[in-house]
Image 1 (tube, helix red, strand yellow):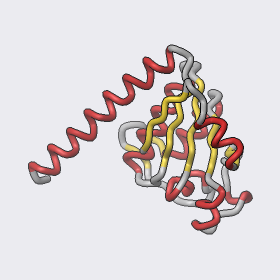
Image 2: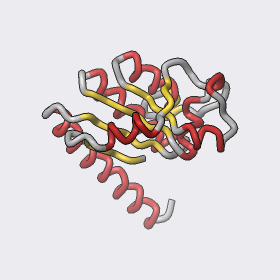
Image 3: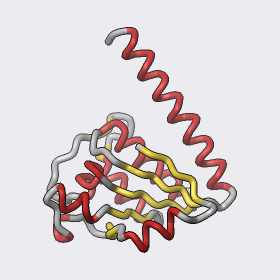
Length: 147
């Protein structure tokens, strides 16, 4: 790995740590943690899912919004790679988050663009229709993290 790539990876990891610390501090004040997940790439998707799971497990109000390529994480028949740090797929971790109270919303338009139907989705995923999404996004106590 080149020096530039190592520096970039270190920078991204550092931002994730700083961001997660702010998110947890905000959650302690009763804020909703909103994870905007736009990718199915194993590293960022796995990190976002793990962070959402850990927050939900601690009793925080957590919403994960799957959009763009992130919708593939909810596809029950799609093969997914495992994140080495957790030894789980992002989908497995999202299911754990939902069991601990997290809501997982999916963009209906992105879902259609990717060729997915409601029947293709894992149990518990909700359609993130505009009335639901805009109500969440207009909350004063919302803290958004994007992956």
